[in-house]
Length: 150
Image 1 (cartoon, rainbow, N blue to C red):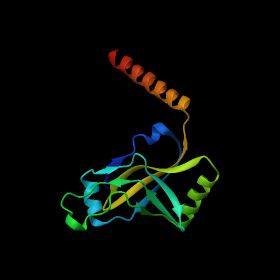
Image 2: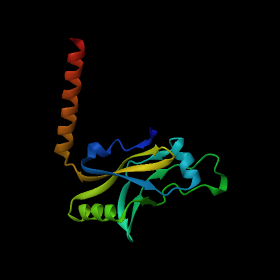
Image 3: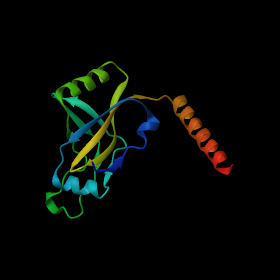
């Protein structure tokens, strides 16, 4: 039985992007970052991943300062290395190189004793796509409410 607890969600990602593929990756963190994550001090809103020097890195992921971290605290916006197999890095890099796609984190979660990141290869939505998504969401909510009333 595996334990899984979501520590941070990127709620805007599914609204802003079409999700083409997802993959699970480990992440290299400092001790105060792990403690801050477990307290919920994380924001994935504008973060993205990029292949750099043969490895995959997570940028713009804000992990707030741990309140009891004193002078040994971490830098909140530092780039963090993602742990992936070389074949997975190559596959993600090819998907981005094809054009129009980017790699965004969907969520950070604790799986057993490890912190994992769910990455998605995503393609940006246009304004009319976002409106269509909102319309579908409203229709679904209205039909569920009508079924509950019956």
